[in-house]
Amino acid sequence: MSTSKSVSVKNLVKTFEGAGGRKVTAVNNVSLTIEPGEFVTLLGPSGCGKTTILRMVAGFENPTGGDVLIGGERVNTLTPDRRDTAMVFQSYALFPHLNVFENVAYGLKIKKMKSDDIRAKVMNILALVGLSDMEGRSPNQLSGGQQQRVALARALVMEPAVLLFDEPLSNLDAKLRIHMRREIRKIQRQFGITSIYVTHDQAEAMSMSDRIIVMNKGVIEQVGTPKEIYATPASQFVADFIGTANMIPSTVLSCGNGEAEIETLGTRFRVKTGLSLQPGDAVKLIVRPEAVSLSRNSGIPAEIASSVFMGSYQDYVLSAHGQTLLIIDSDPANHETFDAGEKVFLGIAPNKLHIVK
Ligand code: ATP
Image 1 (cartoon, rainbow, N blue to C red):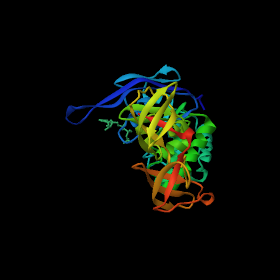
Image 2: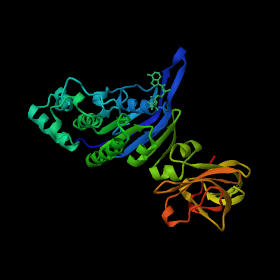
Image 3: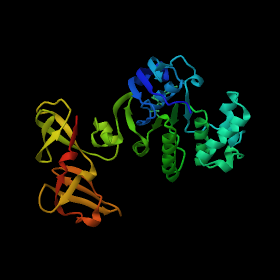
Image 4: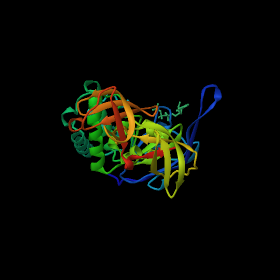
């Protein structure tokens, strides 16, 4: 395996000619660096530009502006086969007339490797992805998950410095998708191979990534670990896109020294924040459903609108100070539960308070 390499893109821009000659800016001045061995996800809604970035790193698309660097070397003018990357596609893109072995061996044959060496390498990789006994099958004799493993094996066998994944699990059923997330991550760790993974599935991004890059309309909204992105989203877009968030309208009363006092839900909170704010500014308090506790005695008055037992958690909708909030009690067996119509009080964990503009 070649040593894994860093990937950087600097001020990357891609414009396409859209319908009627109108210019579409798919990627708008994006800069980021992915460290050697890191698993990074590009996450965002359809059309936000994530696939276009991946394709520019691979060399399938030329940037309109900016640079792509792999292992510190500018690769803008290199063809895909000279970039030390391999791509795993959503559609698998297997050769239908070749069997599993031949599909995986294809790239090595092109490289004119000796056939004994090819056999050893291919069988080794097939064992790794759990397909040792299927070398003679043709792709149409395989399930979707097995086909995707062949596609993964075909990429890995080339021993690239960087693996690129373009929504590789989208065509699989939900259960297999979850299984394959773990498999891909396990193999990626084993090889220590730098990986860029494109998905619009936030659970996939959360469960697999060292860092997530959240994109919207061709620009980066936030870069962070899954925990950072969940706990301290940088914008309403990120808060809404990752997990469930109550976004409660609030007014800034005072601010300074990395803190703000805000008024919301008829009460006042002190919140740590990096935002630059003025008294009177409107902000949103981001409250995750599990950050709220309910009680009968003290806190912000609220009324339960619905209460549903979901097995491992209790799901509440309630109204407080004219706002509708979604609340989850993740340990209902050990807490008092409340019914629709009941008056309660809510408390928000102080260390879970976070505001966005
Ligand atoms: P998806 O999840 O739907 O693939 P994405 O975030 O990967 O979305 P891109 O495929 O990168 O988005 O596309 C970004 C924008 O660029 C979209 O508006 C898309 O329509 C446009 N686009 C992409 N490729 C082309 C092309 N070859 N010609 C014209 N426009 C394009």
